[in-house]
Length: 98
Image 1 (cartoon, rainbow, N blue to C red):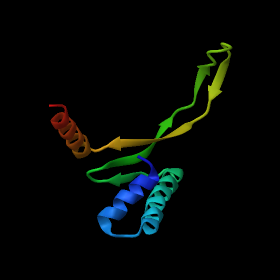
Image 2 (tube, rainbow, N blue to C red):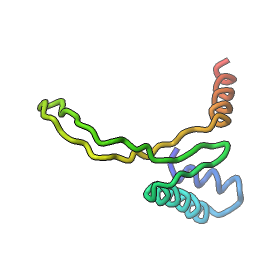
Image 3 (spheres, rainbow, N blue to C red):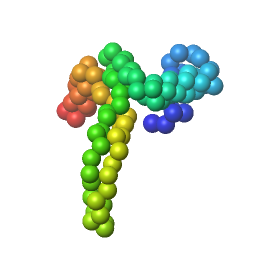
Image 4 (cartoon, rainbow, N blue to C red):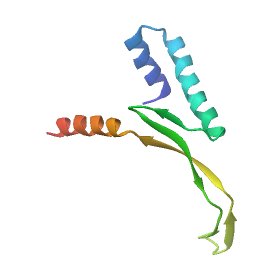
């Protein structure tokens, strides 16, 4: 599903115009990106948590050349799904398979 499809679905459900909904969706995405850039976590109860996973500096090996390289500290944006979210999806898909 694309951003436009998400905005269209929300627009149909709320009665807002598609343009307004697209602005809200873009605003939400910008807020998540800004928070992660500031190393802040975002927790949306019943949905999940956005946070940075910090990878410590380490020595690694270039598999092509075998050369040893040094990797600095890295921040990997992650999304962890809530238990409620997992449960709803699991139950929904189990019903469809049966």
